[in-house]
Length: 161
Image 1 (cartoon, helix red, strand yellow):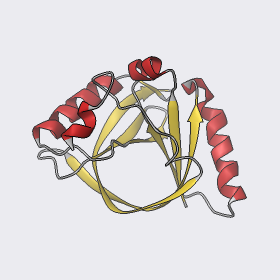
Image 2: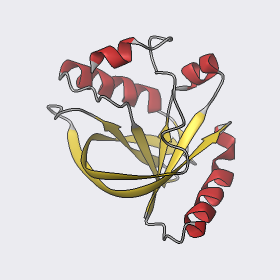
Image 3: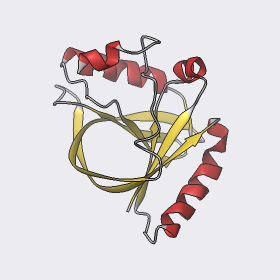
């Protein structure tokens, strides 16, 4: 699993391939995640970087890197978000959760300022598929520095159906 992360051009985030995620139906059964919280002000994260760095250090120390680097955000409040980082095994001292369900996924690209528009588009997409939206997660595929390096800021919206 470590080899996957070592292939990064930036030494940080891997180059994201949107093909497996765009307009797909994905099912998870007890997928393991480390769970934490980010403080926000009107959905603008205030401590995102420090929370991620802290958790990635814990994950690496536990040798629990996931073979597929997925980090989900549940934007459940104007004042904060719950984040979920996929892991390959339990991380001592961390809150661990297992997520199951079926999700419709859709790729968006651009500035985070488009998030409101993307949410509306995702809700419409779910309806077009004849499904009902239960929950919406945001999968930020790279950090801002790596998005700039790669020239693309991909965000995957995952709608639990």
